[in-house]
Length: 424
Image (cartoon, rainbow, N blue to C red; front, side, top):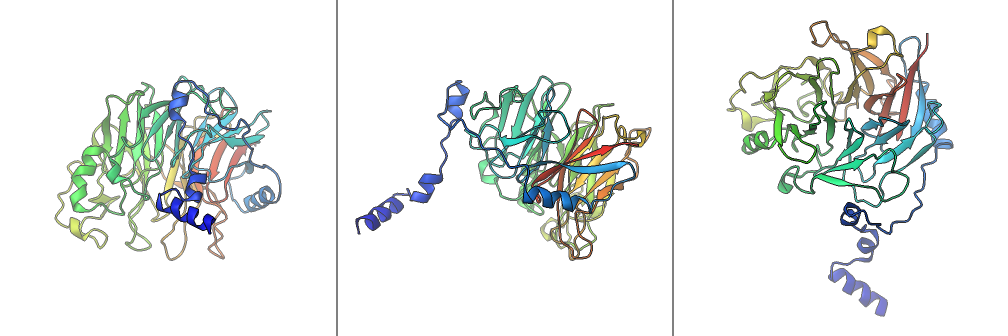
């Protein structure tokens, strides 16, 4: 009886035993002062061999690639999303839509990860999907509503406590009242001039009329940029639904990004997008346009029927088949792949969720024309979607070139990272 009364008292006081046991300590203030957090120094690694790894390798036999290419399991990484290849070591830092950033290490340089463990587990990450590097080796982690920096993360990651700074404090990337479980995964890139670019999806399928102007002003449904101390923040691009992939062309330094299409308008419309930013302040049409399809006034956005068309809206460079959900993208800067692929773009299509017949779960390649525009898209790798059963055996999220010219592909469904290499 005494135990029952105690449990009732704890619950009444908002201190349920489950919540108390699970609530992690906030160690940000300690780490910012270079103090220890008291977190267990032992960080358990993710098993890299066994039944699960064998099953993933077996599923990779279904993946089709052009002649001369092969795909192998690089690492077992639960919930693997966006990747940041370290500047000076054979490491990859991997974001998730949950509470973990993974440090993936190939210690012996054999093209297979030897260790996968949580990075900075003394911190409470919240949807740390976006990871990217500065030119001087600072890891940036963009959460749902906070942006953190980690100096020399690839050299100081072994223990749970790491040097950390706040570029944007919790609750200040977007207004807290606009937080949503929908479209909350951010991505980032750092330009050659040191400015940080962050893509911020808007939290609706189509934003309601009352929110359109507000989101445009705030950069929700757009791309923000700022200095690494969070100052000089501005909206770099507007008219975006939910971009979860972007990269700079190393030749002309312009930014390209993917954008996900509106749901609920049928199996074949609207298209996914690959966009090219050629000047700050450009508007990419949404929610009036999605590709060349007019969303405003459509069954998905009846309250936008009187919306004014944005002036000088920029249309996509590439329109992908509807609902394939293009996410991560990268320019291929390596030399290992044939000349055809050098300087072009790889794009990961996560796969549909609301189409009557599933589609996607593949990697596209898009060459660049001599004038800097996008060439014709082609499928580079597919086979994660079983065409006979309609079952996903994997869902690619991001693509990232390694220093040796191989290409990494993350998969949050299988919980893995794959490595594509070429030999003639």
